Length: 292
Image (cartoon, rainbow, N blue to C red; front, side, top):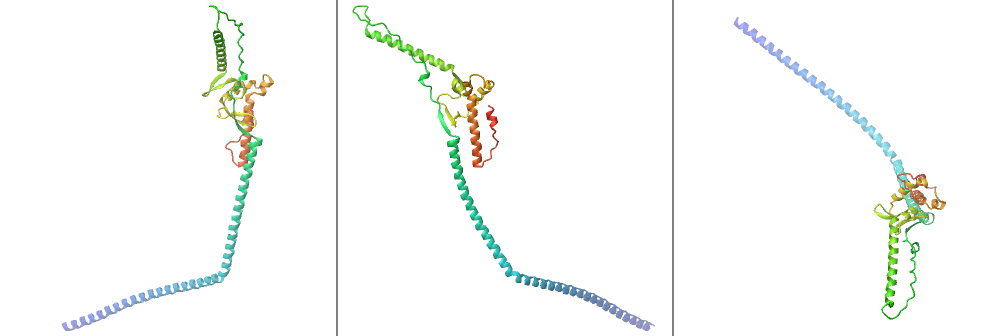
C-alpha cells in the first residue's frame, strides 16, 4: 500500500510540476505578447511621426522653393524702396533748407516791420521833464531909488561906504523874502505819493514832475516807473467831471493822455504779437482802456 501511495504521490507531483511550468510559460508568453503589441504601437506612432515630419519637410521645401523663386523680385522691390526712401530723405533735406531760408527771410521781414512800426507808426522815446523855467517865477522888483547922496564935512556927514552897505542889505532882504515865498508856494503845490514827492499841479496837468523819466509813445507819455496809482486815483475822483469845465481844460485832461498812451501801447502789443506769432495770455480790449 505504501508503495502505491508513493507512486501516486510522485505521479501527482510530476503532473502538478508540469502544470506549473506550463502556467509559467503561458504567463511569460502573455507578457511577451503584450510587450510585442506595445512595441508595435510605439513603432506605428514613430512611423506616423516620421511621416508627419516628412510631410512638413516637403511643405517647407516647397515654401523655400517659392521664396527662392520670389527672391529676385523681392530684391528689386527692396532696391525700389531704398531709392524711394533716399528720394524722401533728399526731398526732406531740401524742404528743411527751404524752410530755414523762409524762416530767415521771415525774421528779417518781421524785424524790418517791427523797426518801421516803432519808428514811424508808434514811435517810442524817453523824455525827462525839464525843471521849471525861471520865467515862471515872479521877477524881483528893483529896489526903490534912494535919495541923492550928498557928502559934507562934519559929524552929520554920511560916508559912501555906509550908503552902499545899506543898499546891499536891502537887496539881500528882498531876495530872502522872494526865496521864502517861492519855497512856500512850492510846498503848497507838493504832495507825497507812494514814496516820492510829486507836484500836484504838474500831476493834474498830466505832464509829470520835473526830472521825472517818462516813456513817450506817439505823442502821449507814461511814467517810466510804471506807477499809475496817483493818476488812477485822480481819474477815479474826477471822472464824473471829465467833460465839465472849459474846453481847453477838458482837451488837456491827463486822463485822455494816459488813455491815449495805453491805447497806443495796446495796439502796439497786439501788432507785435501778430508779427511774432505769439499768443497773448489774455486778449486786450481797447474799450477797457478808452473807458478810463
